[in-house]
Image (tube, rainbow, N blue to C red; front, side, top):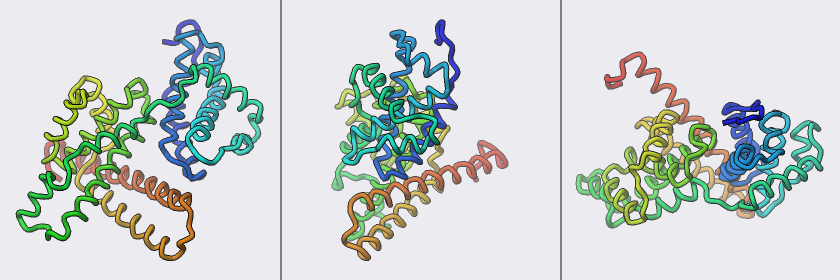
Length: 313
């Protein structure tokens, strides 16, 4: 609720800033998860407008120019706190086309950090995803691969390679959903752990359905309720934003293979490439992956509209 103060920003403003953030971190060759951290800063700081009457936060909600300054500053803080290289305020001044000065960003950074009570190191959805994927069954307990092996679809020598490929696909699907959640205002108040649980459940149903029961049992051991109302709501929203169908999984797998081949070729051509170059390649291909999945999602929706929701394409 806006209370007694004016609000001139909405969910669309937030989504546009998040989209621009992803473009900027790709350009700067830093971790894309910094965007989730920055958006968390932004949401929590602006929430102080109603929660504690923070005057600067209220101005950000009432003035889009101030809102943009606050958003850019949140990314500046997130990157500089997590990365080994600095995002200079001079870059932000240049990106704003001179709309803001260096002192504007410095002052806003102070206001945001104090407004957040210096609580700047909260976990992201992807941090929880990585933890949850770590409790999946080991290779010797992998039911889906055993099924394929027993029916001679996979030679024994290929089982490990197939497992690695499958795990990479699972991780990519979870990461894609986590990034979509960052931009979706409906999930702004959802806990990162609930978003992560929803993303993993959605991906498991399509990539490793035979191991889903074991995964759900492991959630209970971690005192996480994978069937809570918050998780179910997040699952529904994520499914509407990203339909992980069979064609989408095949495309993800194909792109992962292309990424590995490109990385191997780059390593062979120049062994002196530093880690920043490798991370840049990975980030760029991740963005391609999201684009391709969205294209497939739109094609799938088009087919359903023409064939009928209950029909099989």
